[in-house]
Amino acid sequence: MASVYGPVKDWETDLDHADPEYNANAHQIWDDLREGGCPVAHSDRYGGMWAPITHALVHEVAYDTENFTSQGIIVSQGRPEVPPPVGPAPPITSDPPFHQMARRLLLPPFSPKAIAAWEDDIRELCNTLLDKMGDIEPGESVVDAALQYAQSIPVNVIARMLGFPPEDEDIFRTFVHRIVEQVNEPLEERMEAFGELDAYLDVQVREHIEHPRDDLTTYLLNVELEGNKLEMEHVRGSIVLLLVAGIDTTWSAIGSSLWHLATNPEDLQRLTDEPEVMLFALEEFLRAYAPVTMARLVAKDHDFHGCPMKADEWVLLPFPAANRDPAVFKDADKFIVDREENRHAAFGLGIHRCLGSNLARLELRIAIEEFVKRFPSFELDGDVRWSVGQIRGPRELPVRVLATT
Image 1 (cartoon, rainbow, N blue to C red):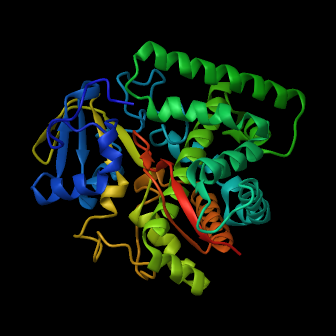
Image 2 (cartoon, rainbow, N blue to C red):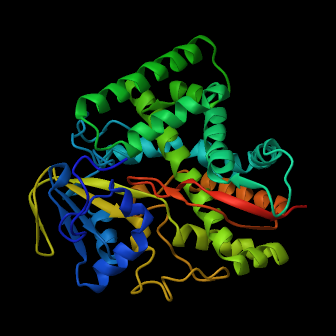
């Protein structure tokens, strides 16, 4: 999908994360900007947008809740209609002090103990997906590790956690695609997509009100904020957050990790021969191929290191670029499978650090472990299609299976 604004002419002054060339070449673009002396790129697209590239500047914006509001986190031609401090998808679109209260509500279901209980289910799901690939002939069979595997893992898990029909997987993926990737479509079409999502969620919420059960949706309907149950808009907004943040991000991380292994046989061999290396490899996959770029809106006119930011302009927060900053990480451009010191920012920085990080790590680890266990040798076989927008990962990933167990 080409950007509505046309091809980018200069990444320093005309950056557009929805240009198909961006995610496919993101690492080189960030390196070129840093090495060219441009720590903050700019664009007139989307009503004005800035993009700090260095770890220090991304960190600074992420922690500055006075000059940058979280009300908007996905860049588009429009602006959020739900005002701060709540925003349309609390707590990630919420500002302090409401943010802390809304975030605290979601911590129990995403605690390490609560998430660990999902391990067996996730492992069973991964093996079911591998089984569905059918008879595999080593050296001959080609599978799509994104379409046939990665994309189905987080969407299935989140559906189960929310208590939504698992057969609605394609519906969830369509919603996520329209919200996260089609950011440059006409505003009225974008609002229509949000309306369809709201209508679907209203049906699911009503069904949960009539038939309560032990799942996240019922939890959100019953939990209290300062002695009161959540407003329906808060419940629906938090579900939107869980769908979007819990599906595309992890799907992309799994796909990028498998892409790396398909193109780096020495690392695949290390994981096959030394499964214990996964302890370090997991964090390196997250650092080197962090999928998530968040956004903020400029809260008021602000001079940011000489950049004249205006109120309501967008600021991209490319955590993946921060993770590859040589000023912070030794050999930042290299994937080191057993890197021991790894304080990456894959799950964000500041008050909105991902509360689902325990789940994401579990899904990513098991997905890689089971794929490598089933296919100890595989290689890339064909063109990779990368996503567009703020979540970076392969959407089509053809790999030829060279060995099976």
